[in-house]
Length: 376
Image 1: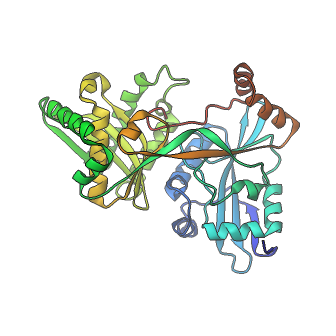
Image 2 (image 1 turned 90 degrees about the horizontal axis):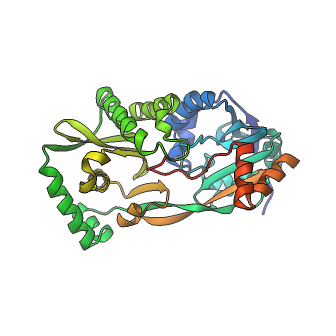
């Protein structure tokens, strides 16, 4: 590999403006994901980070010659119990984590050993560095940070390839038997009243759909760990802000109504001919026998195809319904690095027997990494 030790300047800019024109330009030309979109990160740093007592740690990398923005690593310093952790800007809402730059720029950055060393120095001190939810190794962030090789997570992401017309996609993805089953459910639900399905496009409809989503999800996930994130004010504010600020472009909030009452909702992020589903909610009590969740996903797929989307991404989680809709699994990986003796001990404990792992999690307050459309 050819070295280039004077190509980039690296600094930490904790007041970095993710809504700036230069970041928008960088993001558009990058190979990052929807979860590094300007609106998503701006809302995360402004609304979630303060509530979690997480401090911004934004690594900004510029071309030395032109001073133009070359890459951004949106990181956080988070105190988890006695452990000082460095994490990507996630806070349990993002499914895919990625440096914000192009693959080509990342390769150039790796050849600048001086810039890499500078970056590794600037992110210290820490006990643990944790970067899960990595989709592929096209941008090996472990090499950039001098961390050990990545390891596979115990969960996958799922996406289904869309094709027009909608009826052809049904045949390809669902299969004849499941198609017939859903057609029967549609006949049943239409007998209950006037059914509508639309994408919310104003503050009133977005606010209504978000409130209903919160109402449906609360009881459903009450017994799951620490419950549903949407019940926390800061998270409800975060998702509502993304839905409202991104309406018509970055975010889509769907609502299915029966006689004017919302009975199902789905929030997705639109990015490069793909829709990434990040949160859903359904009136399970009223429409369980009609498989309302499956009907909602089928309508979302139809809308995506009509808009010209090529992929419906169900994101992280191994729920069976994703395969029923033609979802193909993509392995996820993570990078962890100890930065102190305490961090090394915690990493060792997390890999041992279940009771030791639970004790380590209590000490570090590291909640489960896996999130999914249903349980987030």
